[in-house]
Length: 95
Image (cartoon, rainbow, N blue to C red):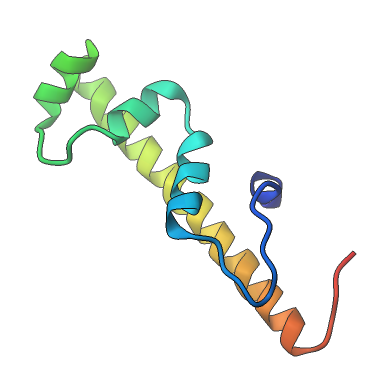
């Protein structure tokens, strides 16, 4: 998971901007998952299926997998930030 965050550098005094984090997380998704996840949340799955020319089952799977991947990405980033904060408090440094 740490390898995913190599392009997200921050110091102990600054935290990454939410928009940057979301864009980086979205960039990790395959194109089809990204397109389904980014559809208007007010649309029903049948409408998304029609717009993307996928069947409803595929839409449900892509939405689930995309959201899970985003949660995993953001969650691992939060853990990395907490670890960075904890090592800074302890006066530790990493190479």
